[in-house]
Amino acid sequence: MSQANGGLDKRISVSGPTDAPWIGILKTSLLWTAVPALAAACVALAGPGINGAFSVAAGWALIVLFFGISLLVGHVVGRKNPSGAIGMFAVTYAVKVVGFAAVLWMVGVPQWLERPWFAYAALGTVVIWQVAEIRAFSRTRQLIYSDAPAGADKEVKGV
Image (cartoon, rainbow, N blue to C red):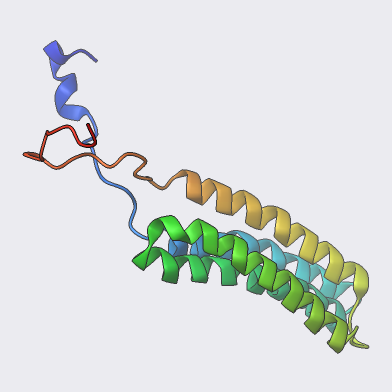
């Protein structure tokens, strides 16, 4: 639509960056993974029974906990230091890998766990979580360049 026939009035206005997107990304990822996990738990209930349903729930919960911690850390750190959130993701990831491995090694495999149901639920949750997380993040607005405020000092520095 051209400006001559009113196209200018229908344009979207400019806005700033999304404030702390991490909780919104967490909610999206939880919703996207909870629905298929619930469906898989119902199918598992009909198959191997309650142990299968618990195995699906355990696989889903483990992945949600693993990825959710990162988003919560990003939310807390990102509020005070937005550019530091990405660095904290890397540190949190390293701590989680070692911590989860140690906990899983110490706990071992419970007797009730149906390994295939647990593994497929965890794998499916990882894939769906990543898709949801990337999609939700791609819809946030990130301020890449900081515009100088109006009336800022225009003097050349460092010459």
